[in-house]
Image (cartoon, rainbow, N blue to C red; front, side, top):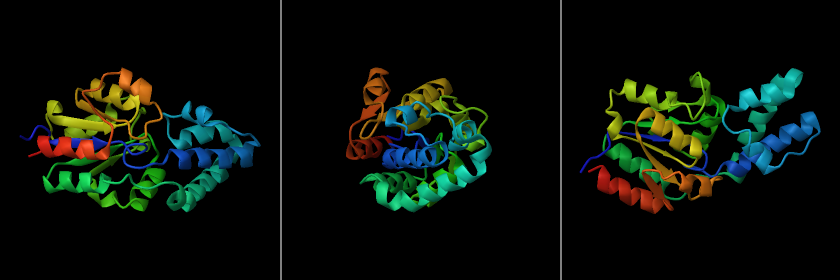
Length: 216
């Protein structure tokens, strides 16, 4: 039975293991431009706005140089520190084989999103990419879901958001779509589990099995 007519994915912690790369990149620019060491927890506390918003606030007059440095480091180290989760490409290929619209909704900026999607070899799979640069307010705003639903004229009850963070759950609920939380690499696993998503998946294989049952 086909229960979904549109599917949306987050990027970090959902498609790919970019958390350590993000931490390293932020540390690179904060140490270089602010002479400050930041912890993973401090970086996580900044999550929400795009990198540009965070860098503008912290770097002030060094913003332009720091932003270029951030993106150069992020792209140069990507192949060393981040990769697509095993099985994700098969998941995306299966969804595409069913002719179902596929979107990205991420809090990342467009530049880093495109770098990551191309580096892990899935950029061409998506019919729409909504980043933090494309909307007025960042997650948990439902705006990135709304634009997808409206563009493809979808029934919200038949749209699935797949992500690893509390913000994904809140955005999906605000938009009136179903939420599948994936916790194979979530930085907020316990909080996510406590929020009672519609579906929870511990492994990519479990997600694929679910989609195979629900997209036929």
